[in-house]
Length: 344
Ligand SMILES: [Fe+2]
View 1 (spheres, rainbow, N blue to C red):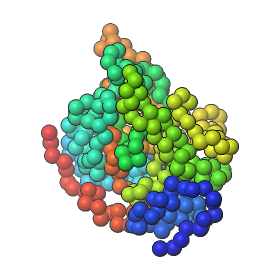
View 2: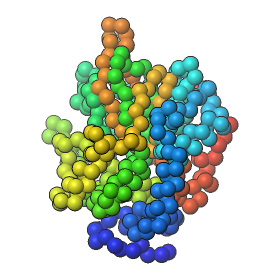
View 3: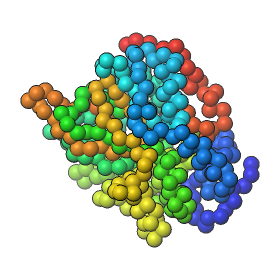
């Protein structure tokens, strides 16, 4: 195995990843280790070629979510391979219950579900405005805007969220749209502007989340880690990020601060990335993605008219295995297309 040129003095999380899994392709190592400009240029060119510019280009119509046919499956995989996300749209707004959603995810290799604090018993969260209980403490269960983040940025490294599906069961009376940015695009734009910023965000202690303490009891310990990392399982670039300012500790050095500013500039404001997709999910639509950067606009329900936004959200430790990073990816059993999933 060739050595990665150590052109940066930082102790990078990625170095450990490279030792963990020798199956990671040479190309992936070169791209993410910052040491091989030619490999990066080749990957970048391929990544940006014909990259979609509108959310409309990400939409795949699904005839029956209980029986995703091979053409629909291949189209979702093709789009995810390019952008790390796709939007599926069940024809005629066909309903998808949570059991169907689980099977839909399995069709794309998403099996290991994260049971977070507020998830329902089946592991899938029902996101709607809550006026009581623990859930109302968390912004996803309010009608407030949710700023840029990736899901589970506070999770332990061995429980990183590699993918999620968010399915619209009912939309709000107004608002509630999403903005989405492929993390690989964020990586490219940051690296093009200044590779040192990428290096800063690869540091093992770049972003620390203090412990979650409820009523004096620690229910989640402190989590420290990088923003960008090469997944130790060899399944791609992992991104861990939140733009929030409270209860967040960035590494205290000038380079990290500059890198964080650069990333914020990509996400918000007049110099925001032109690669950001905007879409408001309608009933029967959903996003399936490799935990891309995303936000959610605030929204308004109309309870008197019975209009209440309801989203089902499933988070996974698996990744939609559609990237080029792992040698032999295509041979993974769960990636083989089958004719359908069974009906509930
Ligand atoms: Fe989220």
